[in-house]
Image (cartoon, rainbow, N blue to C red; front, top):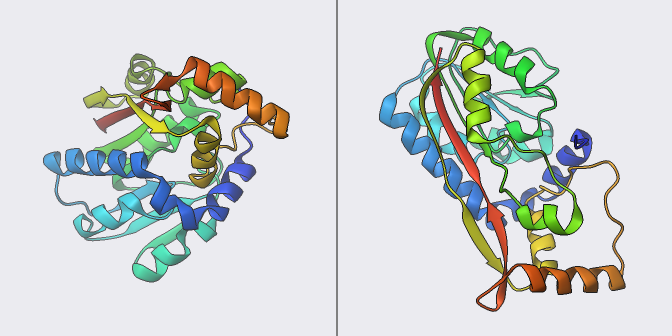
Length: 250
């Protein structure tokens, strides 16, 4: 079981908010896809709650579809500073989603690229279900077992991702009606292992463990060599993303 240092996660997302919008091209692609699929099924919501809004990729798209309260949450208020200035009607609820109280009487709960960080997902799903009104929607993306497979293979570090079938079981066990679920994989190409590490740092996703690898010149050179040996493609190296998508109703 990987220990997630959530304060480190929050700190790194906050520190890298300036580079995130440029570097997080896959996260933008994921957000766009989830938004398009939500509004195919419902175009208008009265009260919504977004978990882990970050710099607001999803918030900025779906805000216009919410007529009433739109409550957003994040671990780090630094991430949302500009977002709240741009959309002053947003209500911000800071803190760890596993520990704070959830808004009630919601007709939409949404999240992108967040739930993989949770320590007790079963308990959170129960609370989300109870926070929704009957026929309310729960739509989210997370990541599957092939996500960052290169890093797991080379460093033995990373999150323990659930498969799409494991997610379906958990969601249905907690009462949700599955409307749709799908997944895809994409191999992103980088010049070197060092470039992969920089990309991960700039998108804030390298805060998985309390005790991470200590890097020096020799270790970095060895990492680059092993990365090139095992995961080269078209004179580049790969980093795999494996997003999962779910749309559900209460």
